[in-house]
Length: 157
Ligand SMILES: CC(C)(COP(=O)(O)OP(=O)(O)OC[C@H]1O[C@@H](n2cnc3c(N)ncnc32)[C@H](O)[C@@H]1OP(=O)(O)O)[C@@H](O)C(=O)NCCC(=O)NCCS
Image 1 (spheres, rainbow, N blue to C red):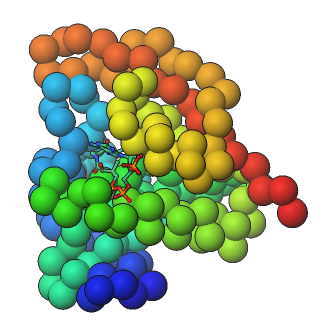
Image 2: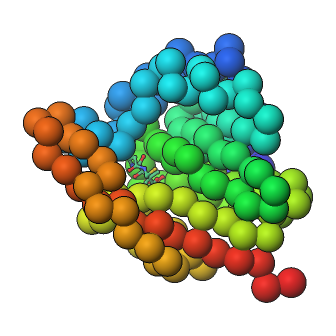
């Protein structure tokens, strides 16, 4: 995928530092949605896990971390650096997740997102709908708790 210099490509452990910079720059710590470097490093080598980078020249503008297990794919993290948000990069990464998941044999897609995160609109536009709620799933910087919505989408064909 290439649009105005932006390229989507597979990433790996060597990109973790750059991914963490985007993580820290995108997720608001008030909500506790971002992951730590050890959490990402632990997950990356696991079977069925893949990282997609949105690269603009040398810089990583955004990323998606995903996993597929037994016909079900999960979008674990989606983030775009604060200065690059709202220019379509998140949607490109989300669409790539959907394509990759299908190619990797998923019939069902799911993700968790904080209730109130504006990303819910993006996911609903891509065909996801709410199938559940996990109460007090995220713990924010000040110990405040936030619900997660579970969103899912199936492939029609
Ligand atoms: C969610 C995120 C990845 C979207 O990336 P993006 O490149 O800004 O998204 P796009 O430009 O492709 O699409 C923007 C759409 O996302 C939604 N959206 C996401 N964040 C938004 C925000 N802060 N304000 C308004 N709309 C937002 C809206 O639906 C918007 O489209 P619309 O304005 O037409 O309604 C990005 O905002 C981000 O990194 N947020 C912080 C991390 C996060 O919360 N990730 C999601 C949970 S894992």
